[in-house]
Image 1: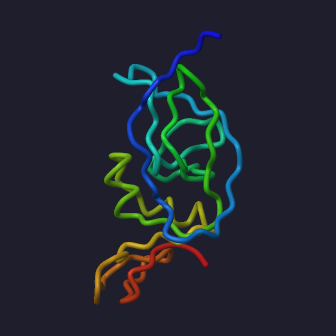
Image 2 (image 1 turned 180 degrees about the vertical axis):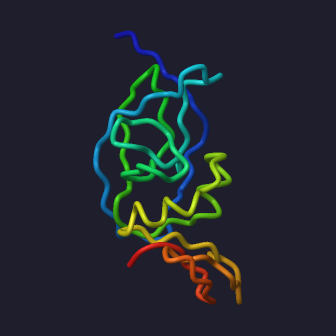
Amino acid sequence: MKFETNAIGGSVEILASKDFQAIPAKIVAAAGANTTVVKAGTPITAEGAATTGAGAVGVLLYDVDTAADPNGALVVQGIIDATKAQAHSGVTYASALYAALPGIVFRTNIGAQGATGATGATGATGATGETGGN
């Protein structure tokens, strides 16, 4: 039997809790992109394209190589480590993302003690380090 393995990098855990809901999605790489890999933590539209916030229906759970297998999972409900997700994906989340995904809480103070100043979905600043919906 002949098989081929395509390594696209190590696995990154963007979740901050084991409780989450995800939906399947076909991911498409951006036209003219230097790579076919879309990284975990990237907000994704209903069409499967990356976005910074507007039109997002979920956040990509794991890296997806669209040339090898375009199937991915989008987190639609749960708690995400926003700092780690943004750093890994290279995407800076726009404020529209928090309103578009009310089922996701974007935590920014994971592993930090006394972190403050996170921005919530309504634009209010709080001391919890949580960003986003319920």
